[in-house]
Length: 284
Image (cartoon, rainbow, N blue to C red; front, side, top):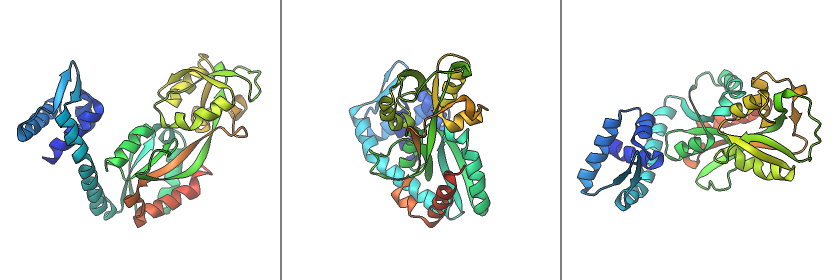
């Protein structure tokens, strides 16, 4: 029954049988059978199909609202009783971080905590937060603000400078504060919320957006426009600091946060991990 309920909750987030099957690593047929079993059990239609998309019925929505907190608590218990007992930390990390300076940070932390086993998952920051809430991850390292996250404990461990990559790395006659069109991250990302106001203050206009900072950087390097990206992304792609415009002194940086459910944050192993990460994050 539990896996059927988990399937319905996942379907409510993804909106398609295919995406749900991908997330749960099962076949679409298995997803359909699980939903059908729930509908038989509750004697109610729980979903409606609209082409390839699936929406919940009124009964399906009520069921998801009721069982989601329960499923999260059960997962939390599982993590606490099993992963923590084994000295294991399951963490979701923003893709841009895990593709740039993150591995160096985690390698240093592993050197300090060799007895701990780490399981890494690369996701966009909003997905990391969703999976923390659902109990799938124990810890998240992600970007963005924490204004609307009263259910999670969040601590800023560093502020990563944002830089401008001139189009094609050609010389750019630009003074910080002058109006400039840039390509940068799209609105659904965690980072966008944290840099939007400062971009407006510095008269940086988002002329185009992409789903990945690495894609933004590559488009800028290819000459499709100026790119606004984290310094770690530029360094990972081999761009010399002399070729970018550093906005650190102008106060434009994306906050990197250590996030966990409050009950998980209080666990001694997670506390030790947090201290080790926060001590090294600023210098990586």
